[in-house]
Length: 185
Image (cartoon, rainbow, N blue to C red; front, side, top):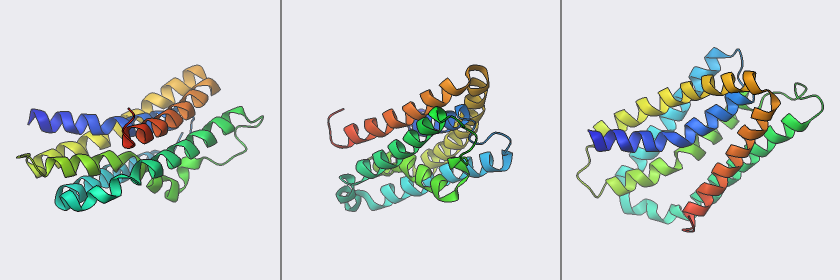
C-alpha cells in the first residue's frame, strides 16, 4: 500500500504544478464547474495512461522517444502563452486558455505521460494494479483541485508576478520532461 501511495503522489506532482500555475494566473477564477472538470480529466488521463502502460508493457517502449517531445511542446506553449498574457498591457483582454476543452485535454495528456511509463515499469513487478491506480486517480484529483485553490490564493496575494512565475513553471516543467525523456536529467 505504501508503494502505491508513493507512486501516486509522485505522479501527481506534474498536474499539481500545472493547476497551481493556472490558479496563479487566474485562469479559472469563478469557474468551479471547470475546476472539477479539469481535475476529473487529469485523473481520467492518468488512469488511462497508467492502465495502457501496465497492460501494454514492452509494446509501448517504442513510443517513449516521442512522448517527452510532445509533452514539452505542449507545456512550453501554454506556459509561454501565460507569460505573454501577464506581460500584455491588457491582461484581461485575452480569453483564458484553460477554458478551452482541447487545451484541457492536451494538458491532461502532457501531465500523464509519466504514468504511461510508470505503468509499463510496474507491469514487470508484483505491483497491485487496482490498488495503485485507485491511489493514483484519487491523488491526481485531489492535488489538481488543491493546486487551483493554492494558485488562486497566491495569484490574489502577489498579482501578475505569480502569472509570470506560473507560466515559467510550466516552461520549466516542459523542459524537465524533455530532459528526463532523452536521458539527460
